[in-house]
Image (cartoon, rainbow, N blue to C red):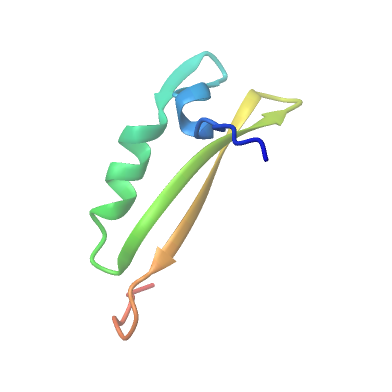
Length: 69
């Protein structure tokens, strides 16, 4: 039986380049987590024809916390 380690994707895509702006995934995640209704957040880069890369955020909300719109 073989075991191998797959590194997390955030180490590979630490910085997202959107239209020449270098954005840190860790800083975006930290800003999202500051919201009182957010339990956890993950940010990844996706290719975009117009800007080169775009930011995609995945957010898990806290249960039973009213979120203002």
